[in-house]
Image (cartoon, rainbow, N blue to C red; front, side, top):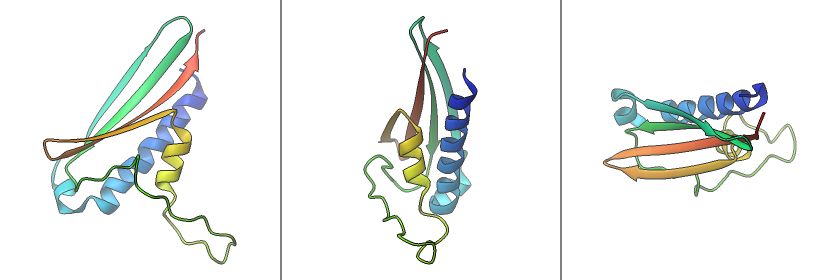
Length: 113
């Protein structure tokens, strides 16, 4: 797996976990957060996907509105860019809510060897 794809997955995972911790509430913090890594491919195309499953309130990161970007440094505030980063760094992003749990999957792709 190329280093650039590892970095993209790592950044997405950090942002997803930060969001669970910051916004998941007591339910998310009291239950395990489950992670699944899948790597697949053939001679032409490879994919690595990470799934984050948590017990926080339902939140569809694929459909949530993004905050507006600040126009100046003075307008900038910490936070609020995690979803934008996940959407821009992943090649595919899916969400589902099942059995009271959020399941967010982000993937990166790269060409064959």
